Length: 136
Length: 224
Image (cartoon, chains in turn brown, purple):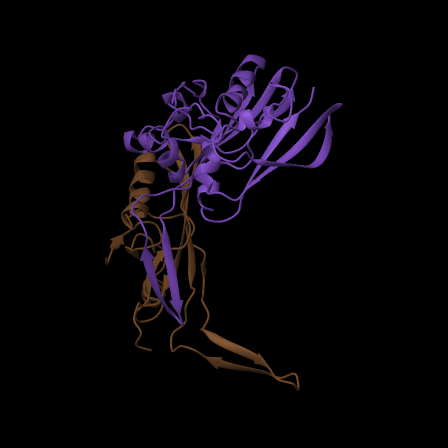
């Protein structure tokens, strides 16, 4: 089952991004040196936490529906330009696709926090998953 | 099975926080590639925490009592008043909140803020396994059958001047069978009927996940 959903075009107020790492194995030698071997030609584990503040509950429902349609962390996400608003050029292209074959997906359950009547805050942790292929 | 309504009073919480339910997914990883596997289509594990600020004595009590009525979190709340989702102006999102069969996840917390005013914090949880076992409503537990539970008095606590006994029931049958036993009868078998205030610490949803493994139920009894 191949599920790909696009996030609604609601501009987040915060979008901290943490780069991933290259899959590698390490071994400490008897002389104290550490040897490392790369296990893949692609990095993995990039993370981004999207945060929307003071949005309406209708917008929160739109964002929540994406979580449901994706069966939580199962499906993949595509990020519309609005999600990456504020970035431009190469950075926006990089965040949308950190490496060839990468796909964004949820890495944790979204949270909704009531702010006041009719307004809420939503946090949505997403991450990069390597393309599901055995070809390395 | 008898059913009695268990619900929260129709107050609007001052603040609340919702964690959307997860789906049963296993992610197998090999190097940088991931292979998610979907095990079911039904979500579970939503959490809804809410705080009612500056409530008077009667309101605070009304918020505390559903914990006991629900068997200390054993049975789900049968219906939630629409007021709990006060301020949510989107019908679909309101349905997410009040249309779900919630269970009280932990003891309500009462915090005095000033003379005669209290903050009450309530944590609700939605777990699929709970519904699949009982459905909404508080069932009457069936009579004890099969082998009696083995009881161990593991420690003794003194709380507020009253001696309390902490009992641990260990049963290696499946969690479903353990839940079907009448815990009330089991406890009364070792003491005079009615002497214990029962409180099941491990909730059924957590136990169901342990099917086929050694199952532990913890029961706290208060000796008058």
